[in-house]
Image 1 (cartoon, rainbow, N blue to C red):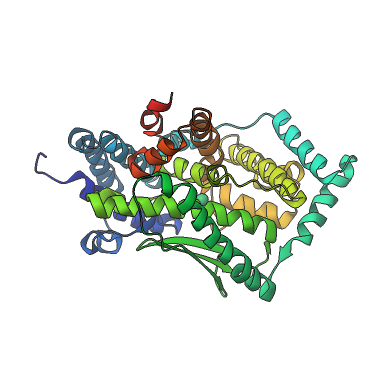
Image 2 (cartoon, rainbow, N blue to C red; image 1 turned 30 degrees about the horizontal axis):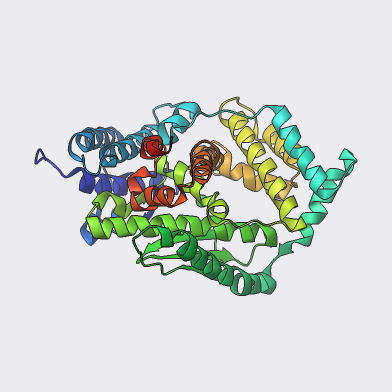
Length: 412
Ligand SMILES: [Zn+2]
């Protein structure tokens, strides 16, 4: 330690500051969760530092982390890469013009690109097959009526949340304990995910890791949801919950201060979303019902369409109405859903601010297909799933696109 500052602690403080900056400029804080010491709480960090100074501090943290955080081996690289991603966030928000491709690479280590039309066409054909529709002109209608039949709102939605989602989350928790934690040779407190129906909110759904090994998932029952996609949400969110539970344990038991804050727009997100989308593979859960087959085909199609539309809007300069038409036609969605998709991926929000979420679409699919799934499949093939889980959960520094391949080098 050179005595100037503790890089882990400094990282937490700076995350809080970048959180204030992103909240002021976009309405969204880059800090997703915090469970660290009171004096490092984001609320207690400076709100007025200039972007350029913040950027310089983050780069200094990256250098110091690489030099000083040498144990365990991936710790320095993990913290450094998180700090560099946040420096890129500051560059972006501070008005220095940074291309979308540079952002996606700088935040996530992922190359921004779009799928060829033939891939989208193939995914669309799978939807048609699942729905047993041979006449393409009827596909859109058929998808809309399938999705309408799964729509829930109001009192019925409240019942689904309390009577279906909550018990399902408990069941997933039990499966994790039995099939994953059991082979770790270490235990962790898991206070579970609480599902709640709320009203009068500006958002549709919200999930939040609260610390103390618990998460909360809220749904605004003033809006309507699809019963089938809600079921998918439970697995995904439990995946995030479990990653956070082990992260909190590593902070509390080993004193890794930098893990007590969870920032968005870093290499961590790629692995976190990739893991959340691979939970069913980890647990060996296969859904074979006819509705799930359709839902999964639709989900894959829309994932590809959403990525393509993001690329068109942010790189190729398509207008909102051109992108909306593409999303509706290629993704088989009505205008209301197309607008919801556009709100997530457009370069600007409706009130003309920078859209914080625009680059984030690159985490889910690539996190799963380029990092988590191939590594998991290799572990299954070679009978090393217990070691896979140990690397994933007992070493939280493996959980970034910047450190993943090195962390799983033993599996090659
Ligand atoms: Zn997620």
